[in-house]
Length: 143
Image (tube, rainbow, N blue to C red; front, side, top):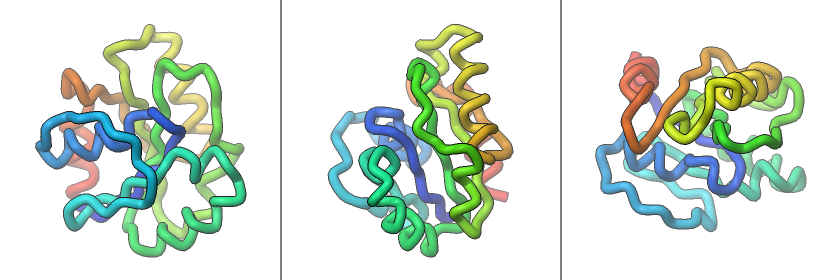
């Protein structure tokens, strides 16, 4: 799988998605610092998106990744991604909607629109609990 860097709000599902894609036991824990998981995933703290003064850390860290993954919780009504947020990275940027098993169709569409506005393409709709959409994401990242 390509080396990816996940960016999203606190509790958006970044760490859980990493655990699912690596076939690990799903255990919630708060990511306090940038963590490299295995050889192919960089998990970033949600604060790095939520506080603009950390954007430089995201940019510097992105050098180590092949693909940037913007993560949006389908149940979250707020959008922390600025329009064309993806342009700060010199890498392909994909979007992942998480927690689709907990969301209504209109909430999933709202999350997809947040990611489209940020410049993510393509966008995957996933659930790390049911596995929905994760195989498609894994296949995309493995090509």
